[in-house]
Image 1 (cartoon, rainbow, N blue to C red):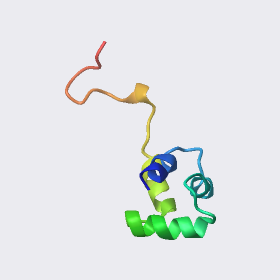
Image 2: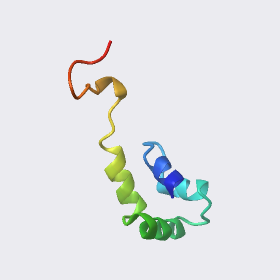
Image 3: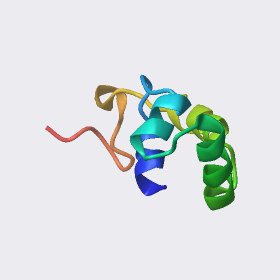
Image 4: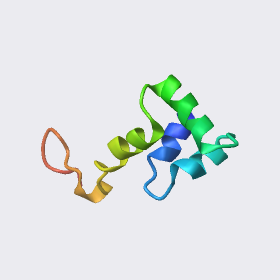
Length: 68
């Protein structure tokens, strides 16, 4: 499921595509297993983990100015 979580964080992947890439024959079977393992559905995980991602250029150093 670690690999599935990495794949779900990618904006251009679907839950169905991730299910196939990690070896599940169907999306519902993957969804049930993922939910048991992680505690939330893959769709909810994807929404929670892709909407807050910003490009690296917009990140600021938390303790001061950006490094040169």
